[in-house]
Image (cartoon, rainbow, N blue to C red; front, side, top):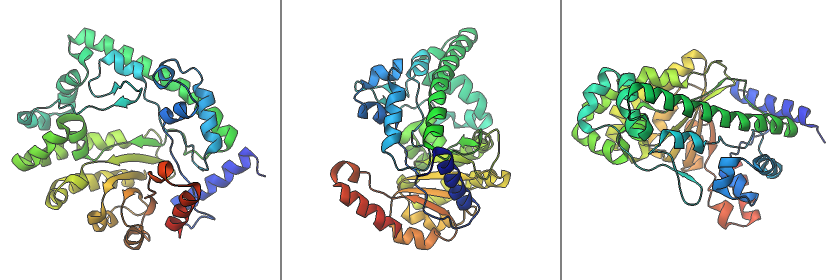
Amino acid sequence: MKNAKELQQERAQIFHDLADGRVPKRVPVGGNIGIEFCIQYAGLPLAKTQWTLEGVEEAMDKACQITGSDLYPLGPARPPIGYQILGSRTNVMGSKGFIQHPEVSVMEADEYDDFIKNPHEFIMEKALPRMDKELDTDPVTRSIVYAKAVKAHFDYLDRYAQIDEKLIEKYGFYRIPPESAGMALSPLDYIADFLRGFKGIVMDLRRCPEKVAEACEAILPMIVKMGTPPVISKYGQTFMPLHMAPFLRTSDFENIYWPTFSRTIQALADKGQRVFMFCDHDWMRYLDHLYELPENTCIAFEFGDPKVIKEKLGKRHILSGLYPMTYLKTATKQECVDKAKELLF
């Protein structure tokens, strides 16, 4: 029986081999469990616990005991206090304790020119005050509110970070090099998710596709900067959750989504930073495009044909995902195991 440190070293070698293009000694396991579900599994009140954090370390420890993940399995926390201070309209805790994301449009269809001219200024001066009610005030008060929210946000995350550190060492989970994690969106996803909303961007792609394309170009440098962590490492990763592509016409994907999306990943790869992208919904019609991304890009799929995906992308990229989450709720233990074996072999 390996101790935690030996297990951590073995896991590190597996993931480093993967990143270096070598076949690891076994298939690495990477699962991610939301903090909310850890709290529920421990029988704690979800809403209250997210505010007080009472019992949350024990809940997270319990989740670590039942997972077979090589990676640290617990997802990032979302501090409700920061959202409350800001008066967030886009992150709102629902009656059951889950933080919901209402459809909110904070940019009008006729404001593309203003955004294209200076994306950062537009976001800071117009979008954020519309997104967060308490920022819709004079500059001095806005600065004070924002400072309070940031302080509360990072104080909250620091408490989680201390727990994370203890559990990683206790159970020997692999972790990427310090400060080598980043997060970004594709330019079109950023505009859709944070500015126009799903309904708005779909209308814009039909009414003013050239403006959408220009907006994607305008925000590209900011997206690359957002996705670049303090420490560049081929063993690190920039996470990119991808949303809009499956809902687009193929022509819109090829002409508007793909150009700046692919250049974002290429720009990060040129810096030496690997991307881990999650393809929301079904990306089967875009597999040939994904093949052209920088070698050893990590691609996780929600849905799709595993055999076709492996045949088209398996020799160039690092693939994961495709496990049907409904099995965890509706299937027997043996059926869950059999499905995992099916995907592996």
